[in-house]
Every structure is written in C-alpha cells, then in structure tokens.
Image: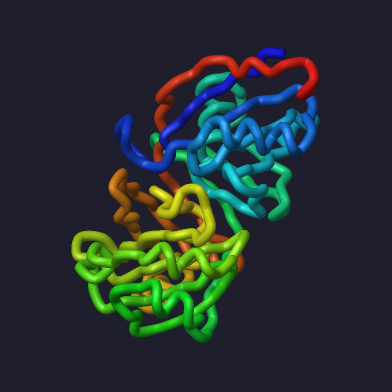
Amino acid sequence: MKLPLFQIDAFGDKVFGGNPACVVPLKNWLKDEVLLKIAQENAVAETAFFVRKGKNFHLRWFTPDIEMDLCGHATLAAAFCIKEILKYPSDKIVFETLSGKLIVTQSEGLLHLNLPSRKPVPSALPNVIEKALNIPPKEILKSRDLFLVYNSQKEIEDIVINRQEFDKIDLSPGGVIVTAEGENHDFVSRYFTPQATILEDPVTGSAHCSLTPFWSDRLGRKNLVAKQLSKRSGLLYCEDKKDRVIISGKALLYSQGEALLPSDNI
C-alpha cells in the first residue's frame, strides 16, 4: 500500500526553519498502532493524518510516542498541504479534531489557525522540574502545560535541562513552556517535553494557546508577535480573542514522497 507523504516546515519563512511536520492524507483511517508506527518512522515532532469528511477534514496528530489532543504546527502543515499541494479551492478549511472544530483561513501570505484559548492559572512547581532547571522561574502557572515565566530573553536562551531529572515526571499530553518578554518581539518562549523522543519542540503552536492570553493581559495588547527560541526558530503572529486565539504563520514544503506499507499493516 502506498501513502502520499509530505514534510512541511511550519512557522518558518525558509527551509530548515520553523517546525517540521509530516502530513499523510488518507482515504480511510488505518489502525491506531499503524498511525503511531508511521509517526515513529517519520521521526519528526508530529505527523498529521487527515481524512476528507464531506466539506470538512477529520484531523489527528501523532508524536513518535502518543496521539496528541492538539498540535498547532502540524495543523498549519496540514492546511498548507490541503490548500497548496492538493489545491483545495476554498480559503477556509474546517478540521474536526479531539479539540473540536478548528478553522484555518488564508490571507496575505499567511495561514491563520483559530484555536481554543488555554489561559494559564497560578500553580506550584514540581520538585522534579525544579531540579531539572538550571535557572529558576519567577512565576509558575499551568494550563495543559506547565507555564514558567522568566525575567528576560537571555534567561530563556540560557536554560539547560537536566534530562536525567526531567524525565522522572510524565506531563503527557503536555510539557513545559518557558517564556519571557522579548527584546525584538513581544514575547519569546521555548518548549520541552519530559519522557519524549524529542526533548525540545522547535515551534509549538498549541503552546501559544496559553502564551497569547497571558502576554495579551500582561502587555495590554491583543495583537502580538512571538518568537520561539529553538535552534530552528519560528515566528508566530498571535491575536487574543478571549475564548479563542488566532495563531498565524507561514509554511514551506521541504520534501514529498510515498510511504510503502506492507499489506499486513493495513
């Protein structure tokens, strides 16, 4: 069985930037264990699978370890695939997902993701996370993810994770957001996942479901420009709309090909 396979760099304006996601269009759903094996074989942070469902698309996301409840960059990549590669005629794409209906629109060279807001609330820092961080945060909050606020962009850049300690805790399907006000952007962040194949996610769209309402309140602005400070780096345009957030960015096709599945895996 042959499956089309596209690798797309999301939230970047050049190849080798942003966050790579694999996108696999399907005619019908395969077994969950097969979807996970494909994600493991792809060995990127997320693989997006979708099936056409009338005018909408049923979308699912898999890391090499688990199925996710929400993934922003793989949603952006899937929308890019549908619009730019498969030539879907509408500028509005509706995905049906574990996080409800997600709408993606396109204008002015950007894809706009309409995602649920996840405003973080004050919380406590688990001892394991405290031991794993070389720099302590000044504020501790939580949404789906543990949300740690720092004094400066320099501190975010200098954070080093002690993985031996970090992997003692399971936060799935979440992770750890570290963030501070930016020097040349409204805010900056990084994202780490304990017990995951990939420790640091290059660009995390879903984290901005929490980052956007937090920094909107803190800075007093609804429209924000964010940078994720991974080695690959990513640029995101964020808008706070109370119970929703709009996360916008670019995407580029890096590679395309076919996955060859043996018949006993179908």
